[in-house]
Image 1 (cartoon, each protein chain N blue to C red):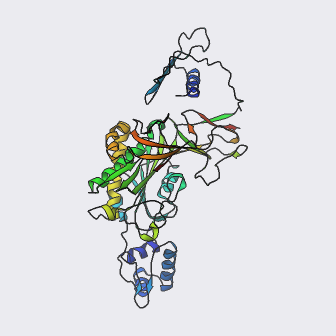
Image 2: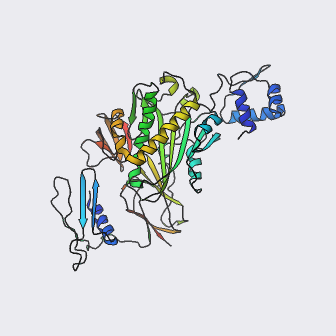
Image 3: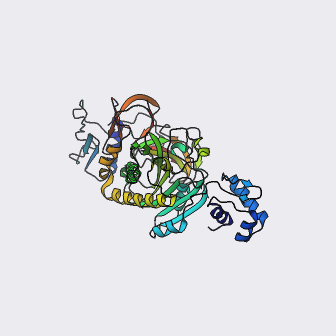
Length: 150
Length: 315
């Protein structure tokens, strides 16, 4: 489980009202909980456990500034774990490009897991401001794929 | 759906000679009209030679889908059977946009845009094989749904084995092979929210009686039911049995998930222990297949990840 994913989970927890979150994926598992949720704002990241041989408990500060520049707007997220494709076939033109105007319901990309294909559609109309995943790249559940500016 | 085209196909399905005159009388249209319809069927790829003094004939006849028999077998489904359509899954995906009433079963004698993974062409010649799609609503969250594709592989492998076919195997995730040659392909498409409900379209291509003319376009080793199955079933029978087994599989999966199919899948595992090349996230890796995880991901030797999708080439 990579660090970005753990970070995603922390963000997910922050946004929610949940106190604890546990994710299992094959032999790996991670549990994140808001310990004393009183004072320390979001230092509440409790031990992250990993089944991998190296991992001693790691604490991560959720306050770290995000390194890359972030384009704001409406985020389209992946509803499932899989591989992302920007076109219907390797030879075809991509569904959308940065700067393109899209309608709600328009297909933005495909996510595949084990030959199950899920077309990801724009859930709002607007202009594609950012594409965060390259063709053929693996994506996680809840990962931001596109930013649409209304 | 009883168009003149369909009526004419039904007449010619017996493999006998039919004169233009006789057809014109039987179907109540002019000979010129018959000639035009025959021409348009030829343009769709049907081999209908005309022999002077004898008439039109489809050599060997045709094993057409019996529309009524199939429709009556599934009163709980909305059944649509076409002479020709772009793809049975296209039809189901269109239907998915309508308010859901009941599951839709779509079959076709021919697909003009039959497709596989990454828009590859699935050869779909007229009245030769099974081209079947089922549209179903599901409450299973998307994250748990992907394993269904493996369960459907087991569904087809079991159906073939039960009909007496030997040496059936599944190439991860769900291509069905007999004697090392591909006999069936499955393409599953899903639309909806992460937490369900979503529309699920399962598309299945099962080679039943692949004609040589179409097979020359297939770029891999293939076989069909006619070649490997000891009992001869009509396409109608294959369609009915396949649909029954598929509905049962969907039912079991919705209750128990992939867990109910893992053992069977492993028995059919075609790649187990074999050397292969996988292409994952743009990188190529020579490795060895080591079965699957509980989620249905492919385990591969010495790799830091388990495979969710990707191109697999046997070495």
